[in-house]
Length: 151
Image (tube, rainbow, N blue to C red; front, side):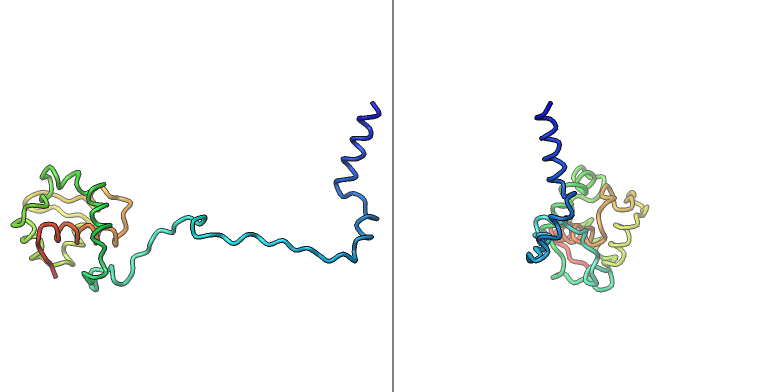
């Protein structure tokens, strides 16, 4: 039993309940602890916002990322475009007709969807979580792969 009493007394003494001990050490320099700086790896990646370069009116081919476009195409767009529900990447004639409408129309149809003579494109296809900039990259990848340019 006495061991329990001693252990309890030591526990409470170590909890800082002794005000006399606190005031005796007031001459000691105050030690400040800082939160460690967050490293870039520790911070969650922020969702990239659409930049002015990624808007239909000002899209510059140099600002587009074909590699990112391929990733999105492979993950989402290919579900319809590979089997031919949407224009296949190797159907240059279909992509030339699409490109003739201009990038503003292509982006609008990709983002907002449309129904045409040859079928329908749901808004953002199967990539509902993609940003406009992501979709611009995918469009650029598809046009580039088909060997077509659009203005």
